[in-house]
Length: 364
Image (tube, rainbow, N blue to C red):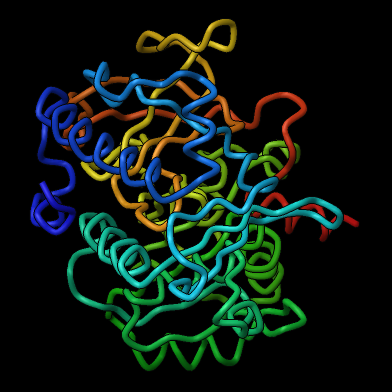
């Protein structure tokens, strides 16, 4: 099945058995492609004596540690075919991942993102407030994870404004004008978790004490990029939702889990507070002792697979996060596939989420 054919399937319509066959066929195809076109990847497979003819499930395919993209230039395309290079988040002094994209992979990332997010927001584009500053997206050839996230989600916005200026100050007048202009309409808000908390929520609460209020009860907020800093401030997901509702009436809030190494295949949080894997990707939880697959409800290291990457060997990656599968095909929200939660970073793993790296710099 080609990727175009996969795009025609509803993202959360396949049960576990059908999805396993679809992903196994696609990921074996991608493994062969990268083995042929990426010399470094081919040497890795040779070093572990990997035999693709023995693979019966995508769960048996080798996975690269996500950190490897910080140490090697891994690409399966010619240098002249690179149209975009994306970099991961990182604090000062940290190495960053470099992800090389050709036109096909970049296009498929965007198409996939649209299919997934539309399941939560609807198909119509909305007036959009980006809770960040405009300078983040200035370099279109070299995208940071933060800039890539903003530009990726901007496709869902019809009219867009940035809520913050380049000094990270809330543009209160701009927000008032925007809300007046689109009064009664559904509005999309997007941003990274810590920035929303630090520069949006806290400022809204300060203004509220002065009698200045904003009504975002018609808003849909999508946020992501790491919880490490907020957890250290004793802010849970439940508290985050509650406080934003108190500050401005926001009720429709969706977290998402994703990474620059597998852009497009994000895992959206449903109405029940669960992260979901679509037909384009999957999550496998592995035991740190022997890397065997964990049972449902058992915490371990998060492995992610994606049906998208053709320009670089990022289709099967071992992350530095800990998570747990909560169930398969039986989430009360009605969506098929695995649903799970992320417990946080593995001990001693580098800070790397957009929110967390920004929070680290902000603290400094």
